[in-house]
Image (cartoon, rainbow, N blue to C red; front, side, top):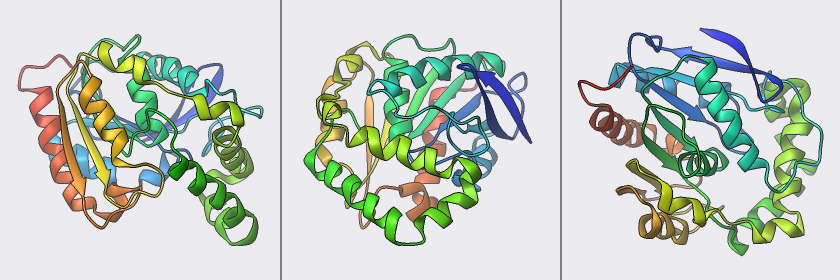
Length: 262
């Protein structure tokens, strides 16, 4: 099922799979810096089927079929999106839930969980999360700017973002390459987290090193399990979907439990 919800002052698209929130807990998907609700493809549907939970993926403002945003994005844009996440969860009537964030979406989940989490948060699956910037990742982000200018990357992204394609790309790429963004760091939010997390990290991730995982393990206020994926880059759920699905489904079933609040 597809629809729109108003949150953060914008009209946002979402896609729902599986039972509604009055029937079962929900896995809430937060996409990466160039992602959208549709770019999760069938992964939310498969996770819903494997867990009996509902699954909802939504496009942040400036992505997919959601409203556009004004550029440039502020350096604190992920903090702003963490507040919008709470509006989306409340607006969709979601009770018990697990956050599944990829890249920027994982960072937004961490800020949300470590500041003012929505009621009913049971745990987080964090795929390729960032908690600080690294030269390794910034160099890859700088390189993809040239790829966007000189290859068919823009055309391929436009299939998922339509008229938002340049807003989506520049809104992500420009802010990460802003000199002020080099000081971006969300480690201060980690000790206040009170739910378990599963961190999924590709061992060949071009945007982040194992230092990100170690920082979360060391500082999170909740228990942290780690799933390293060999021969994998920045998108484990696309590169090794079966391995990620199995681990994520087991984690969701464990943290939701048989008597969890809907």
